[in-house]
Amino acid sequence: EIEQFVKHYVQGGLWGRRQVLRAVDGVSLSIRKGETLGLVGESGCGKSTTGQLAARLLAPTGGVMRFKGTDIRELRGGAAKELRKQIQYVFQDPYTSLNPRHPVAALLEEPLRIHGIGSRRERRGQVREMLRTIGLGEPYEQAYPHELSGGQRQRVGIARGLMLNPEFLILDEPVSALDVSVQSQILNLLKDLQQRLALTYLFISHDLHVVHYMSDRVAVMYLGKIVELSDVDRIYEQPLHPYTQALLSAIPSEHRGRKRERIVLEGELPSPLSAPQGCAFHTRCPHAEERCRTAAPSLRTVERGHEVSCHLV
Ligand code: SF4
Ligand code: MG
Image (cartoon, rainbow, N blue to C red; front, side, top):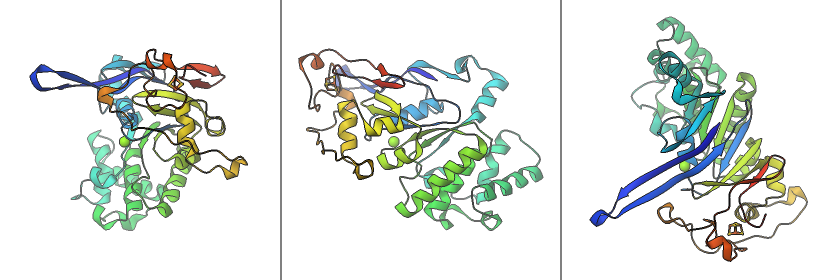
């Protein structure tokens, strides 16, 4: 559970004019054990930053995170170390996160070595088993990252995230760097692993098809805030926030038996350095009213399990 996560960057301007970049601006989410929560939005909306905060790769400016009921700020020593194993982050492009000078076996063994798990022989055994689990066999043990295809590298990236036997994986655009034909293999592998290993996913992507395929629930972000959150079917069938409506109008909906009109947003995505006052979406919203310019709506439950942040809903 994350509550009111905030990540602000203060940028020193000329002559002491300081600007605040509100990358994440009050995000609250709870993710249920065993589910996949999809986090969507345009690039720069703060979804990766939210994931990195949840993985503790970044320190929040404010907010609380609880893991299985425990406020993680209170964990010290062994408990903190244990938590580090439980929550793992998988990067978009494993090519930049895998050390090119190490063969696959060494890359997978590293997290175990760092945490002092097992003898060398036991670790080798675990690496071998993991390579089978992710659909690469023994022959890949001595391969170097540059010898692998994009899909194989992402399998290694996922395997590395799984070596410590985590419960919660944050997947940041895990298939965005891959060819479409390879994407579905990796998505199916992720679904299969989730079943077999009882994993919980935060699935970050800008690709609405991929998010639809993977998620149980979906949260939509705009300029550092969540604007809508609901079950995947409900949000794809009946989006209520004008921003979600515009996003989803861009994907065909024949399989849902209804034609949706394409909503084209006017104007550009504002910079998070100068997010508009009031509702941050008002500069592009087709339904904006006077009050939208001055008062920021808050995320409210409009029906069971469906939250929306809009004055009109
Ligand atoms: Fe549009 Fe106003 Fe709703 Fe914001 S609050 S999404 S500007 S109608
Ligand atoms: Mg990103």
